[in-house]
Length: 387
Image (cartoon, rainbow, N blue to C red; front, side, top):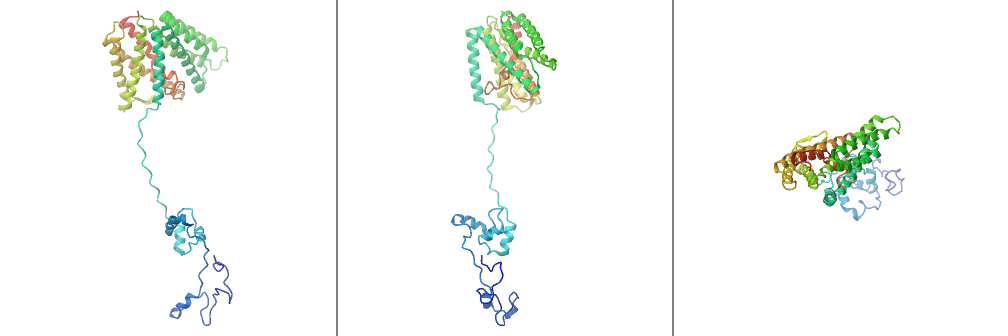
C-alpha cells in the first residue's frame, strides 16, 4: 500500500499534497454546499497505490474469487488477510461481511445404507469347523469305537482347561486342573468299560483327588477352589460319560449319532426360526439373543428329526418315541445353552475360548451336548433297552 494510506500527509510541493489552494477549503473540512466544485474534488485526493497482487490468489482460484464477492470462503479468514490481497474496494460493507461471515452450507450427507441382520458370528468359519468336526466324529464313531472314546476324552480335557482358566482369570478361583484332567479322562473310559457304576466311582475318586491336591497350597480360598473343582468334574466329564455309555449298546454308534443329530438340529432350528421370526425374548437377562419363536423352532425341528431317527436308525424304535425324544432334546439343549450363558455372564465373557473359529471354545460347543447326553441315554434305555 502507498505511504499515504496510514502515515503523515506530504508537505507542499510533494506529489499528492493535500493542502489548500488559494481561497480553497482547508484540508479536512467539509465542502460548503453548491460552492463545492466537483471537478476540483476529483483532484483533491489521489487514488491509493494498490500492490500488484492477484485479488484472488491466481488463475487457479477463479471460482473461489467469485465466491468471495459476498464474503470469505473460509470461516477463519480475517478482514486483514483479505485487505492484504487488495480486497479494499468493498469498504465498510466488506468489513461487516468478514466480521460476520455467512455460514457455508454443509454438504449433503449420503443416506446410510440399510444394515443387514447379522448373527454375530463368522458363518463361513463356523460351517467349515463344524463340517471338519463332524467328519472326525463320524469316522471315529463307525470305524473303531475306542477311537471315539478317545475323542470324547480329549474334548473333556480341553473343556476343563478352558473352564478352569476362565475361573482363575475372572474370579481368581484356582480349581486344580491336573486331578480334574486325569480324573475326567478316566471317568469317560470307566463309563465305557464299566457303565454307570464305573462312572460314579471315577467321579468320587476325582472329587477326592481335587480335595487332596488343593491341600498343597495355602488354606486361603480353599473352600471356593475345591467347590469349583467338584462342580467342574460333574459338569464336564461326568455328563460326558453318558455318551460313552450309549456307545456300549449293539447299535451304540447309531444311538450316539442320533444324540448328536438331534442336538445339532435343535440348535439349528432355534437359530433359523429365531433369526427370521424371533420377536419375543426367551430369557433376556441370561441370553438376549434367544427368543420364544426360536424355542418353538427347536422343538419342531428336533421332533421331526427324532421321529425319523428312531424309526429308521434305532433297532426296535418307533416314530412316536422319536417325537418324545426330540421334545426332550430341545428342552435339555436349550437349558444347557442357557446354563452356560449364565456362567459366562457371571464371568463377564462372551466365549469360553477361541480354539474353534466361528464357534468360540470347546465348551461353547459342549454347552447343549453335555446336559442332553444323560437325557438321551435314559430315554433310549426306557424305549429300546440298554443292550
